[in-house]
Length: 242
View 1: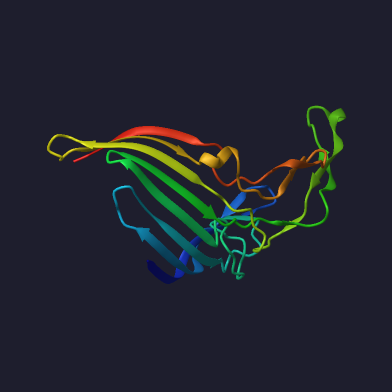
View 2: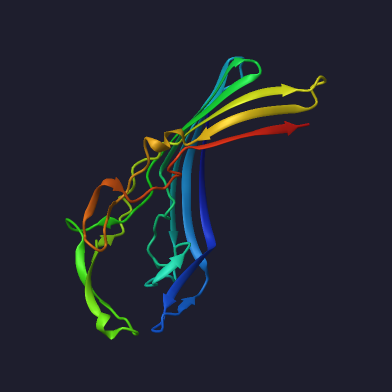
């Protein structure tokens, strides 16, 4: 069993605040004075290679926050760029990652590889109020003045909340391999067929509910946030090494 801990301080990190002038043109100004504080713990429990099965269990706890000193009050940004002196979790941050890898070898030249993962959710905005709110929008048709009119659109107010996150992700990958070599053992080959994200049709991470911006109707049957490949992905191939 291996246990490791780490701490990193990030300096001169790139972030790009973007602002729009009255004419709608973007003002892009890259900055290189961003900060970051990162620490975590990694644990690994491994079953060494054996005749019939081997594998390992790994767990990681990760804590990472960034700061963009000159990025406050920006309209949008890349690599952050909008939070100013406030420390924040990056959009891809997850606290917990757990992986179980298992190799099953019923016969010496046949291997079944499986990987089951668990990853805690990523941060999403927290909705305010019981549902979408309407606002008027004036539609202007320069070629058809009679078509100018007000229409009603809907939005759902939200605020940043570092404790509001998607549900966990559960990736499952499976690979079947036939292993072999030439007569003197110098050339090794592997024929494989694999399926990535086997559980994609049964489960996916869920976030804020979606809604129709034209009617305000909330979609209770599905969730709007998907952060993994939503379907299983098959593959096959040949690996040769010398």
